[in-house]
Amino acid sequence: MPCESEGVAAAVRAAAAVVAEHRVELIDLDRAIGDGDHGENLNRGFAAVVAALDTGTPDTPGGVLKLVATTLISKVGGAAGPLYGTAFLRASAKLGAAADLDVPALLDALRAGLEGVQARGKAVGGDATMVDALIPAVAAAEKAAEDGGDVAAVLTAAADAADRGAESTVDLVPRKGRASYLGERAVGHLDPGARSSALLLRAFAEAAR
Amino acid sequence: MSVGIVLVSHSAKLAEGLAELAAQMAPDVTIVPAGGLSDGSIGTDYDEVVAATQRADSGAGVVLLYDLGSAQMTAELAVESLADPSAAIVADGPLVEGAIAAAVAAQAGRDRKAVAEAVAAAGLPEDLAPAEATDGGAEIELELRNEVGLHARPAAVLVRSLSEFDAEVTVRLGDQEADGHSVLALMSLGARQGDRIRVQARGPQASAALDKAKELVDGNFGE
Image 1 (cartoon, rainbow over the protein chains, first blue to last red):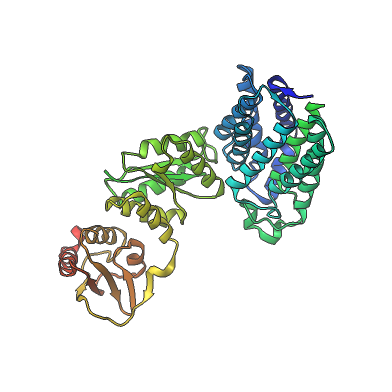
Image 2 (tube, each protein chain N blue to C red; image 1 turned 30 degrees about the vertical axis):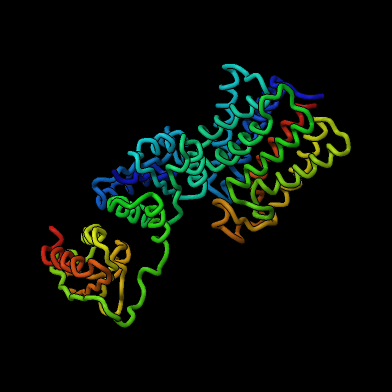
């Protein structure tokens, strides 16, 4: 079943709730290998997104994602702002003015989001960043769509793969961001950006069911 | 009208302090600090960077410098959001040395591409190379009598003055040689009061450039 702008807005609100719930976990993950601001920054950003949605939901899925993008860019204050902001901005541009989000549009949006993160952060797979959650997520989404999955099935496949991808960062030496200054000493730690990417995809998948 | 400079930092204090330091070298350049979040905490504020970039542009464009990763991303996003993204450049280089180099280049009337290149060059050690044998060109020897020698302000005065001449200028102290168009290279010579420097110039206005250098050194750089 395709998803209209109200459905996308509900998924974004669900994601905001998940970020709030995992705020301390993300802070602790980031404190171990970075500057400890990821949970706080992301929570501030998504709280601002919810406040913006409270003043009115845009008419299209693309409009909702654009509101998410501009709010995160303005309010987050750390690397997650420009990275997630660019991801949602590129995804929203792909969706254009379409009234519904169907499976092909969802795949386009996911691919555009990943490309946005990579263009902004210059990270590749294996750098121990959110890209390590997003690359397998996009691949799994494509596979689920090929197998005839609906929006919920595609997002669930993406979330499952993102979880595994995020876990893989534990064994990696970070090559981007603040954690890269630690080098080998960061091995054994889960990347907070990869973890938050997986959390967001899981929240979207749960909301789509 | 000179290129404006925006300093993007996670810390308001860092950006403000650096703007103060760089302004000493470039009294006519607009240098706008954009550091920290609006509530005073650590982070980079996209809206503030956009506003700072607009404020710094007096028509010749803007060069933005950043401290760490996410400040770079915020600066790049801000530039992409401008009505004319080509009006601003996010420069790669060390923040402190780069800001000084950018301020001096902007003060000398260089365009934004040259100012951004000055930031990048500030991270390279090549400016301070071992002296090679002299091959042609004019050379004079001067004794530094001013109190601080070729320190920051005098070096900036010298670079600024020499930029008006069509001449390649190098300055030597002992067996070390520095580019006479780079404040940082001149400062790295560590020339102090009482040191004798040899100034060498090549090009159509070589002798005029040397006359100017002599005038500045003899006049203690206006101290």
